[in-house]
Image (cartoon, rainbow, N blue to C red; front, side, top):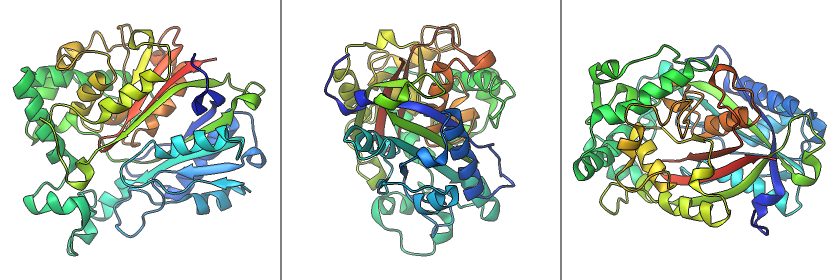
Length: 398
């Protein structure tokens, strides 16, 4: 274990997730409080112990798209917290930014226990307006479109599916990948979700079901797209010095990696068969003596299934152009495979938590709480998320 990096001083000590709905009868603040209370309780702490809080990306209530309906201020007051540190909102699509903020705040001595949460109410938003989830927010479509979306919306690229279908098309063409290979990710997600009582979709599907599903944006099909939900996830980070005295065995943060790209602001570079996530992978492995072969279980971002292929390659689990063959048939990524993947169902089946559900599931696995979806003797877990900004964590049991 390489010393000197801030993440080495920090552990995950608690994790909680609200009940998930599509839509939920609870409002966004109720869901957030539920997840936060469960995270703090799982660590055996009280709200009086929590001295830091942050979230991604901060409150965004004007678009009506349910993307980020609550912020840290109203949550800390609802929980009765008296923090000495509150993280700033993280810009754009950099989902793991709040986690990295929390790690740095703890490692530099600003606080001891930081609660990081991510809340979405997109299912409710879509109930109110069917176009609420288009890029830029459906309710604001009559207004001038600004920023990166001004390069996509005028060409009817109204969804992330349209943008990432370009990557899938290029990947298929360059490497000869096939839809049946890509579909193995969706089939595996449903198989895993069957063991997760909080997953939205738990009924198994076959590769024939996948191939029969409608095309959303060629070559991406219905089951290649994650699902809108109402729900919240909270992760509790603590300084290593106090982590060993808590209820759960601490989960060490072995390494972290990050990168940012231009897809979210209309800048596409390269040949569309890779992502700047490769830089996040390079950073991750440069901060540890562990190697991809040491990973027991992986929670790989699956906002769209093509992103899972690109992330597998970015993190070095297979070579460039090899990910489609790696997942084909599902045996390698199943519970008994060489790299069990997205064991809670991922975003394709459990619901779109923008990657925070993956971090939660990593904790479930490393604490041995997965029940019928538990990977035997899981000690090291890789977690990554992001389709525009890119973050990765390597977690291990202490």
